[in-house]
Length: 389
Image 1 (tube, rainbow, N blue to C red):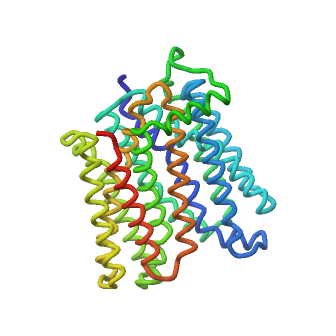
Image 2: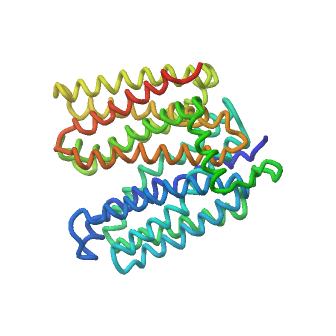
Image 3: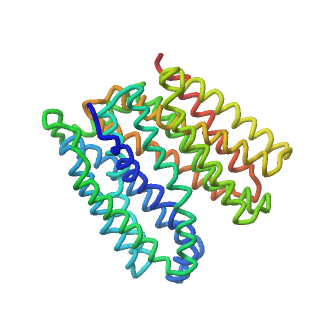
């Protein structure tokens, strides 16, 4: 099915609501706790409710997208996200902030799963990998800009302004969905499901080997990514004593390599095919990650070597993420919304677990971060070896 050239950019903007909503407000945790006179670490509950709302919302939004088409659930979801983000900005207590974060995540989950379903609706195979890589061009920039924007805003404004900006982000997404997003699921392919049918459909999806192996590859690449995101400030600013400015350069370099690799993925998959790309890249990925672990354990590398190794390993996930996503949805054209929802739920539950582990294991060295990354890489390779040929 032909699609406008700007469609991947629109879908990337919508899907970036996830990293924008998490990364932008992380620097505000101390300020939030101070405002509500809460104990240190109390703001983490707002992150936990966000993840819970996102995980629950994706399953429901995926089924709605298969029943009512792609456009209506996405439009309603972005509107709900905007309203809830405004609720966050005006929350009178940390409990209300946590509640509104849950609601915002539930609505924002539509922006996380519907774009993937749209990609499956309009393309398949190499064309789908191409389109997914273009989404990541936008999605990969968000985790870089969001923390910096949040930190910059805190220098001259109250933390509540972060949520007003997110309110505007969601409102723009609503307008874009209303006026420009085509509904790529025709009436003839929409399905009416009751709860029991939905559960059976989810069960059928996770029992399908092609889906679950590709989904696990995607999820464990996210596991390694969240370990990197959670641990890299401690590694470079505490362990290696880099300044904030130099750390920002390192962080930006890694993100730039990731975005570059996601775009090179189009050329690689065209030459090698989706399956061989995953096989070769996952082998290189686990090898380099284990080398990084060896360098860390032996304490034989400085910040430059660590930055280079992290840039390469995280860059390789720019090949894995779009290709594994396409592979997971390949056999689920008739219910791409539900499959995308299950994929997103697995990705966030497995991926975000490393974020909590890194907070628990942090000891001022690079070992917790690199150890979790190595664990994710090994699990990713095991999933690759289990893929049907």
